[in-house]
Amino acid sequence: MGKSSKDKRDAYYRLAKEQGWRARSAFKLLQLDEEFDLFANVTRVVDLCAAPGSWSQVLSRVLIKGEKFGRTAWEDREAKFRQQMLGIFGSVKPPVLPSVTEIKPETEELKPRENVKIVAIDLQPISPLPGITTLRADITHPATVPLLLKALDPDYDAKTMSQQAAHPVDLVISDGAPDVTGLHDLDIYVQSQLLFAALNLALCVLKPGGKFVAKIFRGKNVDVLYAQLKIFFEQVHVAKPRSSRASSVEAFIVCLNFQPPKGFSASLEEPLGVGFRLNKMTEQNLRSHPITAPTIMQNQTTGAWDSAPLYAQFTDSGDITEVEPEDHRQQAETDIRWIAPFIACGDLSGFDSDASYRLPPDHVSLDPVQPPTAPPYKRALELRRAYGGAYGKTSPKV
Image (cartoon, rainbow, N blue to C red; front, side, top):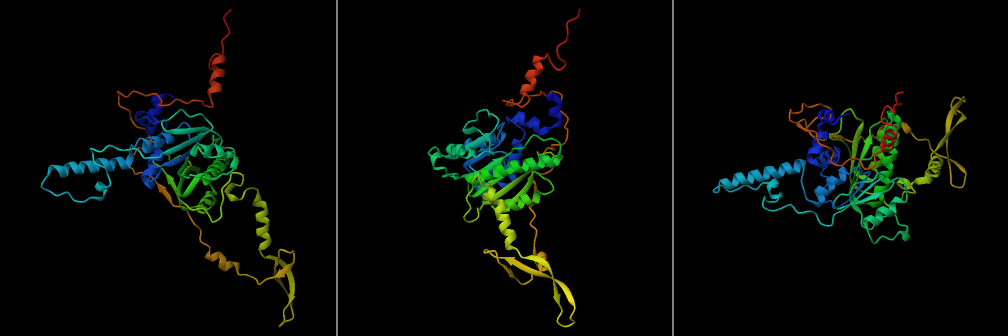
């Protein structure tokens, strides 16, 4: 597809090139920050599946350079305008406005945050960004944890075999997704496994009270994922930015206030603290539950033989003891299903990612800010050139 038609079809694709972003996905992170204030009190961040680096570029410009975008920039402009209007009327005492007192004066320059540390990880190479430490590694492999801990803390000693960060991070983000096949069930499953790998890595480096943001594919059993995340985070939200196409099944899970369970120790060798012990724990859980067996008992009043269930329970020594029957119907009625809130980021004043907009007559299509460094189709293009193009080499005329 040509650049002109792509500019007309996707407004965010065009805006990303005009504003200097490497990819249109930068607007997704900015819109998520507008809704949840993700960058508040954040100085240490890990960006997973970062290529081509648009989210890392947002972190670099916001945390390191001190720039402001979206609603924050709009509030700055409104505050400066009010200050100018109040300055015109010198006799009028300016009222105390909360939004004005929180924003720096116009003469004071924005200062970058101190002690900022940003680490970006991806299997694909990432072009350098100012202030960003890039790692080319697989987030699903246990060997990635020592590399990440070494990048976060230069004094980290890999010989200790520790998988806990000495200086945890404030925010972990992941915009990774597999190459979709069109089979939605398969794509959702592969994406969930990638999300679990990102979560397990985040549990190793995230500090209590930290935040976790990752891309998900909403499917049939996505509620199970929300419930698992609710174990580690106080708040779990599902967000759909305005720049994310409505026709896409993608959304973003935003987890706030990381609170690990008591005694929990994260490790990629034991995902979510369970790992290969899951079968053993499941067996122990089943042995602890009462089991029923059909028995025949005589009614003392009528003398008839009635069938009634016998409740028994296995003990640790292997003996069987009878227990009192329980009323499971009452317990089922008291169970309350927890549903993650769904939030649509942005309002109708923004661009529609599914709409086509008319371009002005003097519009000039710009080249991408950062061309792909190692695209998956690079080998295919080389083979096509070797064989003479799309239609192959033509035989010479006789």
